Length: 74
Image 1: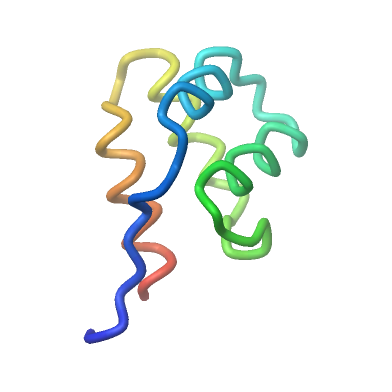
Image 2 (image 1 turned 120 degrees about the horizontal axis):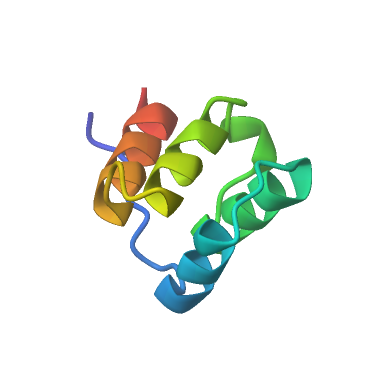
């Protein structure tokens, strides 16, 4: 696709704070969407699992970002 969105302009320290204190609440999901600069509606509920896995060191922050980019571009 030519018009792919890339999540390149987010505050990494704020993102780390949200993910490190992740509870999976709707507020967490809203904060994640806001930091990444995308609408809450673009994030399905299972995205909460990605942030949880980052907080548990099961995947990297980069893996989460790539997964969310794939989601919003497809």
